[in-house]
Image (cartoon, rainbow, N blue to C red; front, side, top):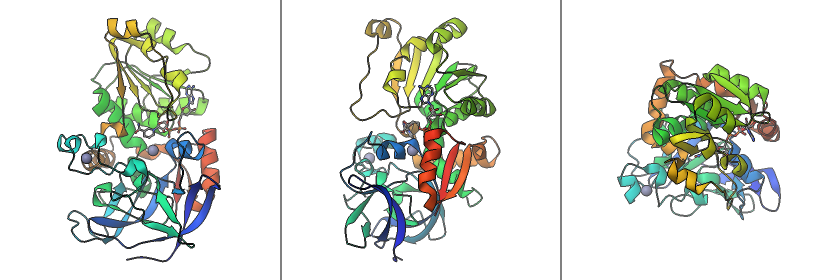
Length: 366
Ligand SMILES: NC(=O)c1ccc[n+]([C@@H]2O[C@H](COP(=O)([O-])OP(=O)(O)OC[C@H]3O[C@@H](n4cnc5c(N)ncnc54)[C@H](O)[C@@H]3O)[C@@H](O)[C@H]2O)c1
Ligand SMILES: [Zn+2]
Ligand SMILES: [Zn+2]
């Protein structure tokens, strides 16, 4: 049980990003306390930091993490202290119609997107008693956190924590986009635009699914190189290539296009890349309120589809252990996604890595 104070990486509308000491309250019914061992730095944290998704309250960043259960509350049924877990940032309620239909990623009752626990509270306070809120209901850039049991997914102890952390967001999102959202079949063609942590996970998923060709597009030569290592058959410079024209000429239009940047300007170009009946999957998250324009006649006439993709249309309890098993049996090169490993105190440098595209996924360890 808790709790001394520990440092946490907080973004505050008035103060920007800084480290603040926070205390954690003990677990309540249905909750677990988790000691964070590894946390990835995802572009969604950067969207909060740079104001794409504004917050009016201090938030502890971090939503891609793995750790060890240190305490369980009354009524928890599936977890015990010592269990290794991946944190899942869309804690489903397990009761709403979407959850009942097996679509946990569409849960209508989750409060994670409001950056609170399911009861609308936060488990964190600072030394002045001010409440500090968990980004996506987790707040993983700190030493320990409290979450509902549905946000902690048990994984095998052999799974390295750094891989587990990436399973918490980028990998599950990227592979899920291929397997669940787009349902890619062997031999279908696919284009991935933006090959950071999420886009490279899409590439991994496409290789597993047997897509061919797999075309990666990025502005960074290192990212294009990485995409080829992860299984892309072609890599294009997004700044120097008219990707839609390339897709029409070389592929007769792609069966699937995945956008993993969150750029409205790029998203508007996706339908032009598709063959008739093809699907554009929006994995990247645009700034709140952003809109886009498409040729509406072409969409209808050619039966093209635009699919939204939250969390890779994944059910954490099902998909995370499944992907962990595929990693452990050598089927997915998830280790290769791990970039620089830094102590939590180097969070500024970690965001600089992300902004500059240095290395692949930077990991923070408390
Ligand atoms: N759908 C979801 O549930 C979900 C989950 C996680 C992340 N995301 C979103 O996915 C997006 C990507 O996240 P990430 O962590 O992989 O980011 P990242 O910063 O690691 O990767 C983005 C990549 O896009 C490339 N890029 C930028 N502009 C480009 C352009 N015009 N053309 C080609 N390439 C370009 C960059 O060089 C970089 O390699 C973000 O918007 C993030 O919020 C969505
Ligand atoms: Zn993320
Ligand atoms: Zn629900």
